[in-house]
Amino acid sequence: MEALVALTPEGADGPLLAIAEQYLAEMGDTTSVHGWVSDKTGWHELRYKVIEGFRPTDAARLPNGDIVVLERRVQLPFDFATRIVRLKAEMIKPNALLNGEELIRFTADLPRDNFEGISVRQDDAGKTYIYVVSDDNFNAHMIQKTWLLMFELLP
Image 1 (cartoon, one colour):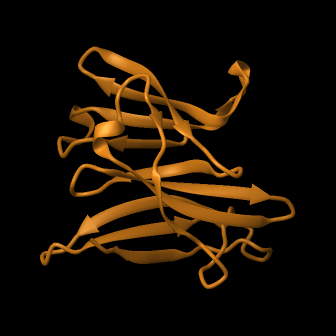
Image 2 (spheres, rainbow, N blue to C red):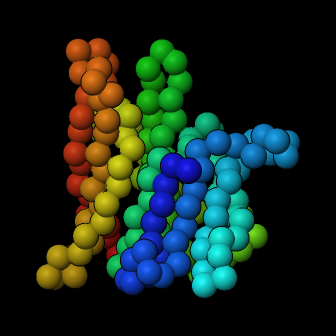
């Protein structure tokens, strides 16, 4: 499991979404990864669609209940790519194939690194901000760095 997020304001007392990083290769599927959604009866399987080698690394809940998923792609030698995908709340249910909308893909004008954490906050004026953080894996003297980026999510 790579990402775990509460689906409601109740936090861990409510339903959760968990997403793995590995393909469903044992089933011959290299276009999605394992996922699970919980409810009062337990955990139920679902799948999360992946593209172009991107894999989920974290997820966070938006104020409206939608979920943003941080995805990372690593191609050796140390070529990182990052994107943020939004999942509509109503699509998250047992046996679903979660296929989100890409909000942003980090291009040359943004840092390209090992981004592994995402968080969301809403300010008093109702603006929503998405934060992402990278992990240098104690390799700061090499290619990886630690970055904290903030984006405003526009309506």
